[in-house]
Each structure stands twice: as structure tokens, then as C-alpha cells.
Image (cartoon, rainbow, N blue to C red; front, side, top):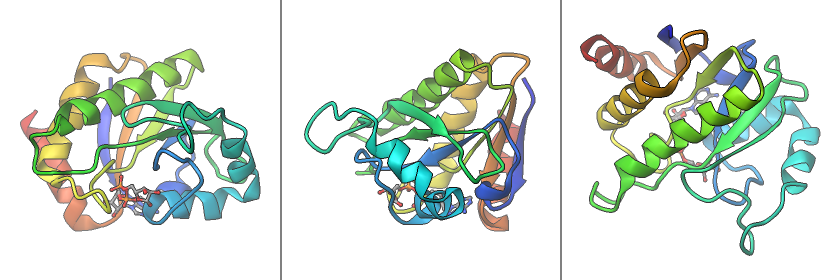
Length: 171
Ligand code: APR
């Protein structure tokens, strides 16, 4: 499958789906989550609220994913996933991060999504070192994304994009 790195605001990409780096409440937040909710409009928050809680206040446990429409976004769907908080790398962070990518691709397959863009899940507020996150993301996607799916890895700035492009070149 084609995997490419793009430098962009994720909310502007006209993909079948964009992925949100959310928290388990799925009620919005800062970073890319805040940007997606602002660009999608209030319908997105209503759709997230309508998702069932699997534990008090938890609509999506770490490593899992949920799907909603994109509302005012150019993307048709938003796939919300919850990355791990970085605690130094010995608390299963890499496995949980890989699980995020697997969960998102599984939902994309179920919804016949042919083009998808991921942000650098966990690499902001959650503190995951981007070089390591990029390796996990690319190795996982190479294994599981279908040949026909067009996958973009969306970085917000040129520095982050160079880290991800480097990881892609080495993979
Ligand atoms: N487009 C693309 N990438 C973006 C955008 C955007 N509009 N805004 C931020 N980013 C990048 C950040 O620069 C970072 O590299 O997304 C990456 C992920 O950062 P965060 O959004 O902080 O996500 P994460 O580290 O997974 O933390 C999730 O942050 O906003 C809260 O509700 C969210 O609590 C959750 C936590």
C-alpha cells in the first residue's frame, strides 16, 4: 500500500477518513483533537457523546478506535483512537501504539475507506518520542494496511515530517 508523509494541518485533508489522537472520554481536548472538533463543528461532539461508555467516562480505551462522520470536515469520517501516554517505554507503550494503528485500519476496512491520514499519535501531549513512534507506526501499517489503501502520515511541521520521512526511508 502507498504510505507517504505529508506536512499539513490534518483537518484540511480531503481523505475518506482522518484519524484523531483523542483521549478516552472522546469529548475533545487540545492538540489535533481540539483542531478536529473546531473544524468539524458541534455535530462531532454530539456524535462522540452518543458513543456508549464502556466504563465511567470511557468511550474508547487506549489502543482501541471508534468511528464518526466528519461533519464539516473535508474528510468523510473521523476515526478516533487513544494513544498511550509515554512513561519511558517499559509500560507496554509500543504495543498499545501498534494496537491503535491496527484498530484504525480494522475500522477503515469495515467502512470501505480507501484513503486515510494519521496524525503523529501520542507524539504531542502524551510525550511519545517521535522517532520511536514513527518506527512502530510504519512497521505496523506495512504489515496490515491493505494494498489498495492510500495511507498518509500527517505531520504538522517540517521538523516532525523529517523524522517520519526518515523512518519511512529506513523501513
Ligand atoms: N494537524 C496535524 N497534526 C497536528 C495538528 C493538526 N491540526 N495539531 C497538532 N498536531 C500534532 C502535534 O504537533 C503532535 O505531533 O499531532 C501530534 C499529536 O499531538 P497531540 O494532539 O497532543 O496528541 P497526543 O500526544 O496523542 O495526546 C492526546 O491530547 O489533545 C489532547 O484530547 C487529546 O488528551 C488527548 C491528548
